[in-house]
Amino acid sequence: MADSGGVLVVDALTKSFPLLDGRARRAVLAGVSFTARHGEFVSVIGPSGCGKSTVFSMLAGLDTPDSGSIDFGRDAAGPHCAYMPQRDLLFPWRTVLDNTTLGLLVRGVPRAEARRRARELFPIFGLSGFEDARPAQLSGGMRQRAALLRTVVQDRDLLLLDEPFGALDSLTRTDMQAWLQEVWQRYRWTVLMITHDIREALYLSDRVVVLSARPATVLREVRVELPRPRDLSILAAPEFVALEKELLGVLHG
Image 1: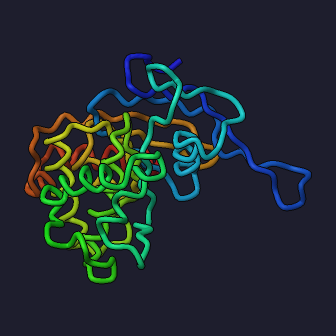
Image 2 (image 1 turned 30 degrees about the horizontal axis):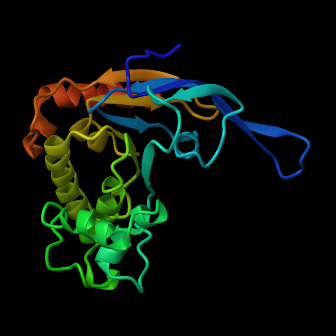
């Protein structure tokens, strides 16, 4: 049983999917358990296809486990997560402001109130002056900031970030990692992030959960006890290099 002290407790999730012939099933998750505490930044890493996104789909209510449980630590009624997928999924015909209000509008928040709440975040997300722009007028990093704004403005217990910077070039990705750390420290959201980048996981996270190859189990949880705020020089620090080596050993051992 996972520690029940967190805002999120994932306990012994299992999941399998039918194969094309319909006579057999492929096991994807084989008892995945972990927690995310209030205000904590947790990254989930593991081999491609091991079931990371399947776990996120269950947390977001888009799928159900075969067995196991998900507990958000309070009244189970109502949605708990805001989910940012790998692609920004901004609608090209809507303004940036109107894209960022979509989650609120779906929940029934009046349009004027939704626009007010989203507009307040534009300076913090580096998007001031682009409220009436179309997504095609934004850089890749700005599009990702708009997608994250659309996610956090929903004010959920937990932010699910599925490889949020995976489509960006290396320099833009580094800038976005530094920016995300800065705004996270300001708001202290509870964040669960999927990434294939070990350095990204260590740079941003308080803990890193390592999943095995499919069917996934938790191989290890690594606590990242590096001082914050972290600048890029931390990547060369002996403590950081030791943690990176430990994670590489777990993943490739």
